[in-house]
Length: 344
Image (cartoon, rainbow, N blue to C red; front, side):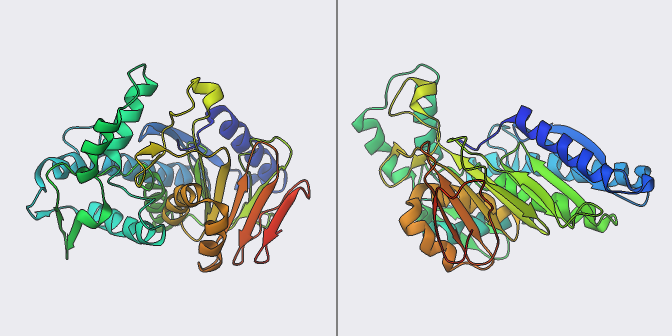
């Protein structure tokens, strides 16, 4: 499950605005707008030469997010993705550039995780989501029937815009990368409109901080902490952070269920920590947070250290946080952590 605590995110944004306003001249007050899209609430806080210019830029950014929802949604039957999922089995289908790009950008994360991150996991996820809604536990035979339908190597990219599925039942689900991609495109729109300082927040799970609020070094964001003891924070300045967390059995009253499924086993990932990732853009942060949740901290630390300007933190309920970094800082209120690669 992509972490989304809308009330907490709203409080964080309100705090950012209040702190920024306290350190800013009267002519540089932030503008905050909110819109529901992609199954979550997007918040954008921006500074401009005038409130009118900031409002106009935010509106154009929201228009881009809504447009991308029409491209990447697997719930809307007429979205570009839904049409691809109906028609690309053993046939090359030309798609719009954004869809081609986001599928292409997902594949390196599948390779680096040896298939644990996989945008073709949708058929398996649907089985387990049905159980969360009160249906039966998927049987071993049901899971076995899904095996031919899943596998990123069954996606064939045909430049410049062609995609083919090498399976009769393969389906793509962009839930683990699509919101990050939309955040990055919204940032591009804001920049094109002359905005140099903004925070784009996709439901509290993925955020990009452009520039910094006046008088501050960056956009301070408090990360998800299931232990309520580590107090992790980051300062965003032209980079992004994303958080992933599995649905907990204490909430679902089911030890097997969960929204994040390991495509290699067909079962929900058995993890009890939240993972937050800092990266240079929101697409990478979004995909990496799911990737690092699935591969775990031992393998994940090595992936972080091989990445450029990336940091990650795994926080279990007991607060024994594990961090790794190839540059960016993750700050902790406590020292109850193990760090490697220069992280704090």
